[in-house]
Image (cartoon, rainbow, N blue to C red; front, top):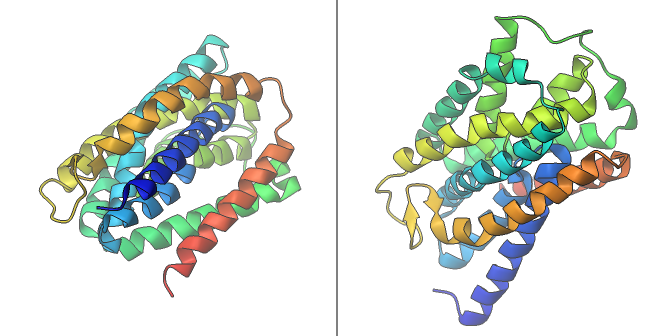
Amino acid sequence: MPPLSELLELCVLLALAGGIAGFLAGLFGIGGGAVLVPVFYQAFALFGVDDGLRIKLSVGTSLAIIIPTSLRSFQSHYKRGAVDMAVLRRWVIAVPLGAVVSTLVIAYAPGSLLRGAFAVITLLIGLKMLYPRSAEWRLGDDLPKNPALFVYGWLIGLLSGLIGIGGGTLNNTFMTLFNRPIHQAVATSAGVGVLISIPGFIGNIVGGWGKAGLPPLSTGYINWVAVALIIPITMLIAPLGATVAHRLSKRKLEAGFGIFLLIISARFFYSFF
C-alpha cells in the first residue's frame, strides 16, 4: 500500500481526470476514456498491480464510469433535439455486440495487445484532429444502409470497448465522413457511449471475475474506489461541456485534444521499450 501522501496525490489526480473527462464527454460526445485510461494505468501502478492486469483494469473501470457520463451527456443533447435516433435504433444490436466481443478479447488477450491497440487508435485519432482539413473528407453524401451500417456500428463497439472509450471519437469521425453535421455527430455519440459502456461494464466484471492481483474493492476488471470518486465529478461537469459544444467553434479545442492524444499514444508506445 502506498503512503498517505501518494494516496492524496492520487485522489487529486483522479478528481482532475474526472472533471476533464466529464467536460470532454459533453463537448465532443465522448465518454472520456481517452483521459481516464492513461490516468488509471499510472494510478494502479501505485498499488503494485501487474502490468498485464493494469491495462485491463483501466479499460474496465473507464467503461463503468462512461455509463452515467454518457447518459448525462445524451440527456443534455437529446433535449436540444440534436441526436439522430434513427442511427441509434439501427445500432441497438450492432454496437453492444461489438462491445461484448471486445470483453472476450480483453479477458484472454495479453495486456500488451491492449496497450498497442490504445496507442495506435489514439495516434490515428489525434492526427486526424490535428489535420485542419480532415473535416472536409467525405466517403459519401449520407450514411450507408444495412448491412454496411451494421458492420460500422459493430466495429465502433469493438474498437471502443478494447481501449475503454465511449465511441465518440470513432463515431464522430464516421458520421462526419458521411456528411452529417458535427453537432449531430457529437450528440449521437453520447448515445453510442451508452450502447458500448453497459455491455462492456458487464463483460469486464465477468471476464475478470476472481483474477488474482487486483487491487482492493475490485469486482472483475472494475475498481469501485475509482468509480465512486470520479462519477459524481463527471456527472456534474458533462452538461457544461454540452452547453459549450453548441456555442463554440471547436477547432482549437480539437487541436488541443489531438495533441493530448498524441502525448498519450507516445506514452503507451514507450511502455514497450
